[in-house]
Image (cartoon, rainbow, N blue to C red; front, top):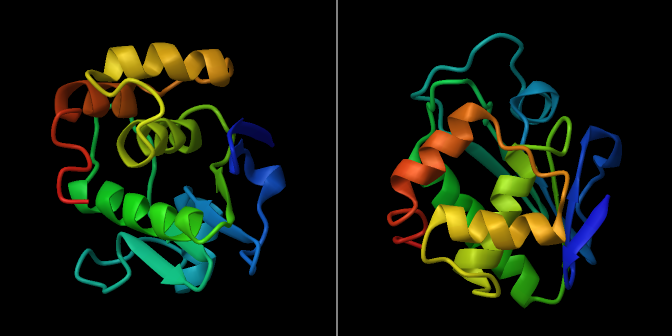
Length: 160
């Protein structure tokens, strides 16, 4: 687990923990976190109320994978920003984890620092990525999330 900014941490699955009064946790992995929290084993119908996310107290479970072709829905990122900002504003630490701590979790942390906290340049994904990689050198976005952020950067977080 690495602190990338005051009270904002990026981690892999080994740092998966439950949220508490002091810590809010974003579980940015479909398998196993979202599946366990929502209670399914294969695929969840996209009509399910918790298809994209399940917010339970200080935990946000995200149905997010990082395939080579981006399949992301904008509402996923808006919900992430809303949850994260609310808990960060309440003085909590924010732990964002995915399976390996290289693509999804750091991409979300980058988005949070650029759009919610405005502590890194948000004029373009490329610029934000450059600044973020100084904070988190392990950042290796997958092809899908890189493509999605590059193509949709101007729109990400607009309805936040």
